[in-house]
Length: 163
Image 1 (tube, rainbow, N blue to C red):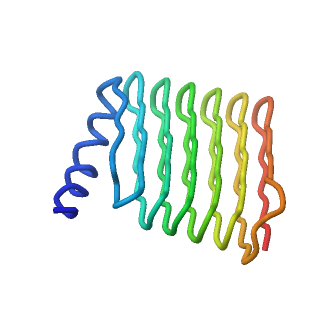
Image 2: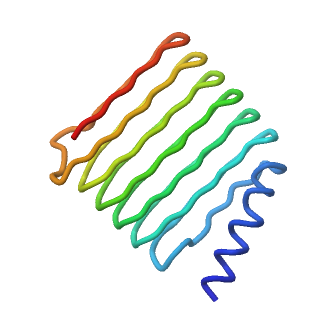
Image 3: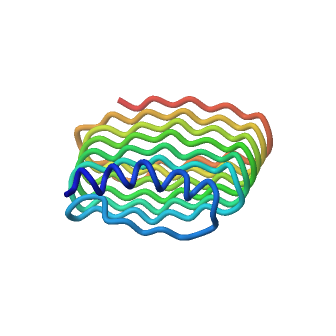
């Protein structure tokens, strides 16, 4: 039964999210939840959650935006908001207790994020156009505080690796 539900989710939800402005809340595994909201057209959300007690709140307003998110582990939280056109997020969380918040307000912003280990916290804001952030965090111990990045303006690139 779970396989059928997962198949329906991955086949139907992206096409619905592309064509309609409707909020979707889905139970992805025994205890993981995704809340998806896509406005306008040609937006796409690809969400995969493995594990328990994972939460994703993903919102798109504009056109041509993409969110690709994989959470593998337990107790992970993600909030992603995209407003504008052509924004892209590719995020991967593997481990336990990660938190991720991304706001992209503008056009053609790119965010590539990976969190591995235990208890990592990232906060990303991209305000403007054509900004790039590429962050990889590999930590076996929980971080004491969140890594917070704010890009304001246009055409700024930032690459960070924390090991």
